[in-house]
Image 1 (cartoon, one colour):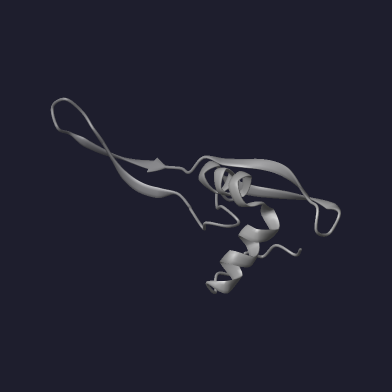
Image 2 (cartoon, rainbow, N blue to C red):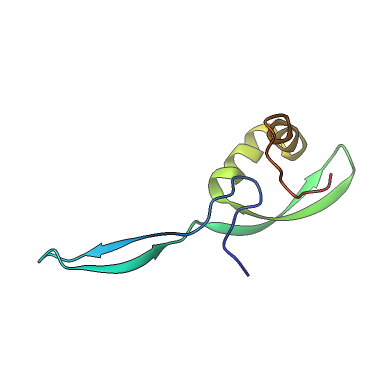
Length: 82
């Protein structure tokens, strides 16, 4: 399963581990993706999402339905059917 957020689109990026002697080896920075079930009061059903923790904080602030509508108004495709 890929480590990509449904809403923000965050995905792994690459970088370097840098030792004390300044040697560099490749590594991956993976986003903090969590699987969470949300209740959508507008539709009366539960939705399971794989989202980053930063998106989770925004959903707690705005609500799932409002956040999806905000992203759709910006032209961002979420792939979530509400």
